[in-house]
Image (cartoon, rainbow, N blue to C red; front, top):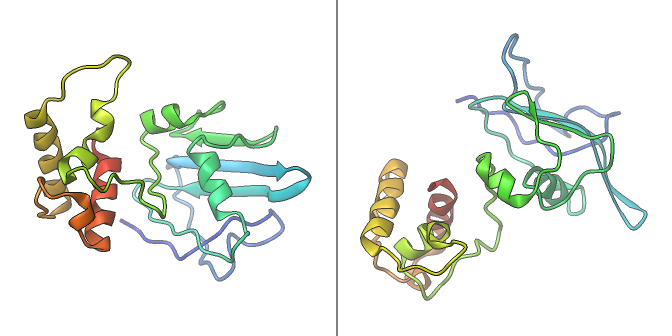
Length: 187
């Protein structure tokens, strides 16, 4: 995996990000995610202007910047929460992802782990990790054995050992973050 320096969305008149090291283009490789001309206006206030960036397969990026520079806005556009202004181009594996909404973003493998983690403190680790697997259009019984298998499999993949029966409220902040990451990775 390659790691790029911290970057944040900026307008097209600046470098890729303040203090960022430019990513060396991978000749012949298609970006996993390609954003061009991404702008967003809220009631006359321009939050983003002509943001461009590519994420190559295996690349790890960090969005860093001052409050109000557009980090959350770009993440919400990528995850389908917000719609960019007309003229934006968003490609995933070279295919347009126009009209993105949160459900479609999840189907494409785009997950966001928000700062508040959005966990259920009274539920167990396994219940939190497999939560979305238990959602559906109609009520059904929860298969706890299957839920624990899915949770155990993802924690093993992460190389982490957390008691699946522990309530999330009893975990450290670091363990809660791991549970949130595991929930984002389970499918």
